[in-house]
Image (cartoon, rainbow, N blue to C red; front, side):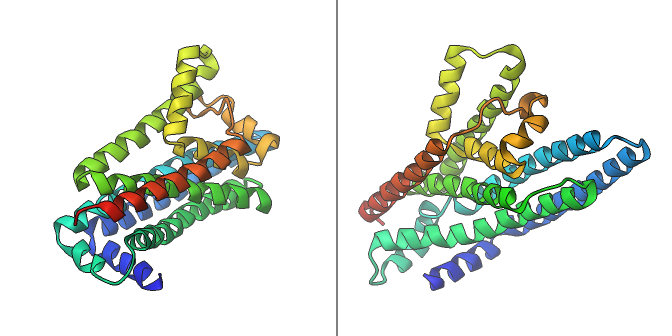
Length: 281
């Protein structure tokens, strides 16, 4: 497995999109830190109350993690959309599959190789955003809450990776990337619409659509639970996301839903292993 993890990293670093992703991520983190520092300075000059400073810090945390999960998702899409079909087209997959290793193990090894580096990238994003808000805006945070939010924040792109790799068995590289991006975007859109319904009131048909979208691709639901945990759960999270328009959080995914996402990922991995074992190379 170590060999495949190392090979996956070498493959990622050879792609120009990897370098572009790192540069844009660095630009985002620098601009975000600059913006947080400037806003914290303005709040300090206006002698805002402790409650106002707390609220401002929580809002900055919500916005920072929102764009961080957006970056993590697109890193997944660009790095994994051609895992099977793309390597099949350039002949690399045939050379790798010729080794005396069951195909399902090869598929899992590729998933694990991508998962390690995606988890590292997501961890850097999460820690950078949280540290920036905590140190510059003075937002008080608890280690236990951050640990739960951190684990769920990493789990979100791994779910998207599982879906993208399954799609790469059946679809060409570009088609798989477009399909996965549209599904992710639709799930994100439904989450934003659900936030707007906080003011306008919900509709039964809209609630069913949001529920079905969450079951089809639970990435946005996992992200919202991650944000809820990182912000302190029921003690503080409601303060920051109750009046933020599309970023509001009218409902929080339950523990049962998180267990569903584990089964969801397991089923997609099983389907991917089975489809890859039967694929004509």
